[in-house]
Image (spheres, rainbow, N blue to C red):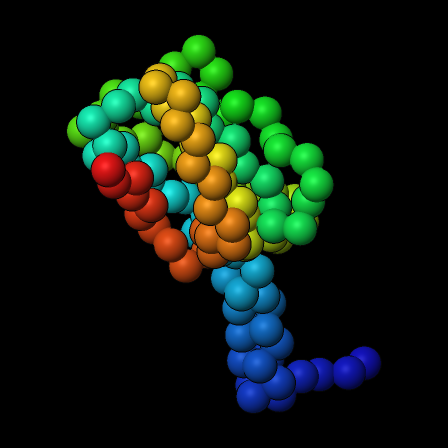
Length: 110
């Protein structure tokens, strides 16, 4: 029978407890609309993809002066995303390479 020393047990515990923390990233981003125009549609996709995902707002809109929290968690662990926002006046703003693992707030200004 093989016994582990207290040091090897501590190292094993640190590896097991630390692994999920290293893999887990906060991918929640607060989207702020300060444009003076209502945000009607918001699309995102991982950077490098050739297709946009679905409109994450669905039937909702985001009036100017308001915010919404979006969760970009995904099974692949992507952090870099492209954003595409479409406003009620037809303005379309696209931003590439937003690191959702590092950015907690993203603001659309006039």
